[in-house]
Image (cartoon, rainbow, N blue to C red; front, top):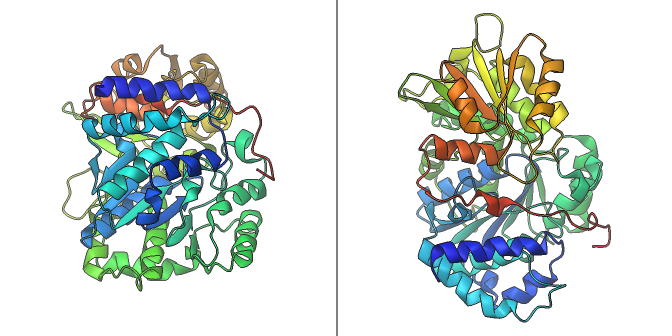
Length: 459
């Protein structure tokens, strides 16, 4: 088997959809020798900010000298991004070997109960991290938490970043229902750290923590301590005021685990100052002088965060590292308006997202808007996106494009371009801009099918 064949095999697992429940994952783990029992985890769930928080924790613990595994999804370009050790992607040979080892085990399952793509990848990651003798694994949920394949582990700490509306067809149509699924990662006696402050969602998290006798720390009350740390020693390279809250989660988690994994202040500062997480308010300088901002604002809450950043909600000093010549978002705001001058918006959204409200949130910030299809079976229609943007900003010049490539060509004369609406679109942009080492197209591995029914209360 070669790497392309391994990818093709993984792609074929999409036929089994996205089923929820832990039975298959536990069975596969047994066949793999229960590698999760050899590892320590920090389990991260939530609607937005999971990836950034995971990246910060990985960077801090790596700076402290640990060998750190990182499991995240979706990938932007290469499947190998999902499984990393000390921020080194799993090799193509490693993927091939793990696929070959798992294939005989999959034959033990009936077609009706066949493991899904994500269940298989979860076991691949656990096996690889155990083989690599990782000291700690930063472990991000795929979707939800309670019945997510990642939930077969018992972590040192559980993190719930926040609760927002997303994936309602899977997780429920109220914040309380969604919170119940995310809070499903809380384990008996295992500390929980959250940044949630919405009463309905927070009440569910607090109730679950009490029932599990799990100490709960809400970092919203830790802002003064966080502000002191940043003033004294660290400036995040990740753009956006919201990243401070993600940093607060990471810091609170490190503090909570000091008795199990000691980390000194120098490692914390180094980790935060050097953290890297592409595709989230990532500012790219082109040789022509054009600036392109890439951000996977894929739901209404993240679109609002992007709009706030574009409107000057993030001071320039917080947007760039000390001594860096990277431009800040604030430098594009027209004086006194809070709206970037000459902003061109390239927007592509998935159909199963709340795209009308995403358009309503982002369109008023732009003078020119290019709507595009996402390279996905679930893409929203670019014409429908254009109509929604036109309703939200009648003064904007709006163009429907048949591809991202065409939109970037038409926006070549704009000084500041924002590409957003889907992480799939951001991944495609990274490839087209020559910012990804991947040569093939593995983004389709992110696709998953609808479940026959949403998650039920009894699993």
